[in-house]
Length: 239
Image 1: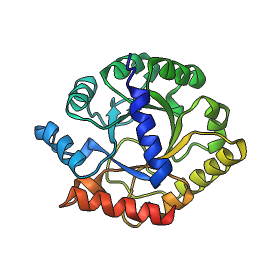
Image 2: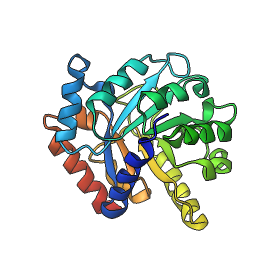
Image 3: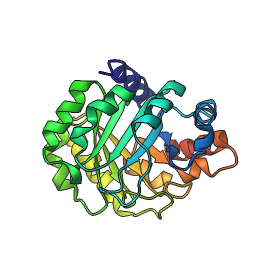
Image 4: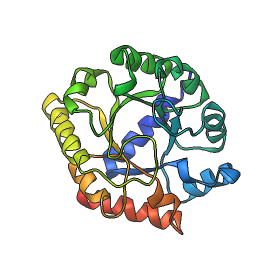
């Protein structure tokens, strides 16, 4: 349904391989009254991809936005979009979000009845299939599904709210996943989401994170370009 998704992600992956970790600004805290302009500003500031948090008020307490906003961002954006589904029964919605323009569809292991089937279904639709694990979910639960993943998103906060404090358990999980990837010769990417700042981005990059989601650290800054550049430089120095 979204045949260009794989190509867009491949360009991002090449950038990561050649230049190191990248920051994906999360739109959750942006000015939704001027959404297209916010997307434009982030791209002008050097964002190589954008992260969209979909919350249904059931899987997580907060309710955010859905398909209409993803479609609007897709029309405005030239860069790849990671659509992070923090919703119940995500398998019922993946086709819609693929059609809406997701280049990466990230689903939570904790919310999946059939993780392998859902990941394979995402891949068949076109987007890259990423699996998210929350702070209390051990890496061992994700291991059986790693061969069906294009990426793993390690949550360094409890899913559902922006602005939380970074949980260092994410560093252990990233390092463990990086070790598994190395030993298996696997190709999945490692992401991290939550509490990213100038203090935490170095450690997560050193632990193996490549696709680093940053919300407040970018959107609450006075200068998007400076914030993205500073964070990415810190990450690349540490990787």
